[in-house]
Image (cartoon, rainbow, N blue to C red; front, side):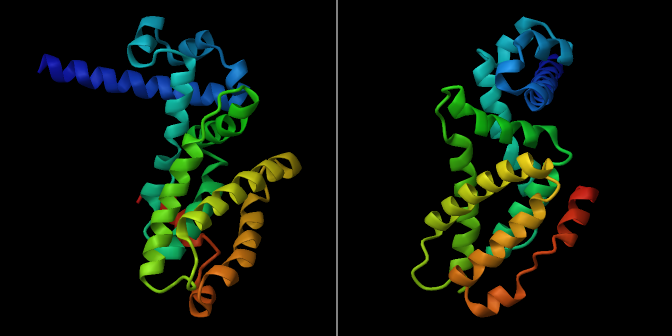
Length: 213
């Protein structure tokens, strides 16, 4: 029982560190979020942090790696629709989820900070490639479409679009920009019947995410 309590406390401590770090990175960026600020926000000691993470970069990497869990568990669709839904829900969650916003900001800032690591982008690419591969197996993609290249292209587009949207409207029009992206991309990669039935409204997604289902 004592060991179980210790493990539970460790899980809670790690979660508190990740949330505090995400909020700090979201507000101040990697450079502006000091370890001291993160620990003060979490109400923890340096020892607690270094038990879980060897430095701030490791903590930032863990925050960035948590992005997918703010989106993927809420998805219920399959194939190309699931890939579309991923981007639409991602855009929606960016408005309210500090972990996701921090992960996105860290991904953009890493190059400027000489933290050259494409792990986060690669993770999103692999997730989308899996959804698109299912779509290909279901006959939803046109012949000759490389699912990995398409997934990488979508991740690249989403990254650029969110940067543009953040600069222009503080992401208020991010969803609309992503819908336009899909309206241009889908006819070139999906079969006509699938293009016609893809739902770009996102309404059912937002309802599911709101209820936690």
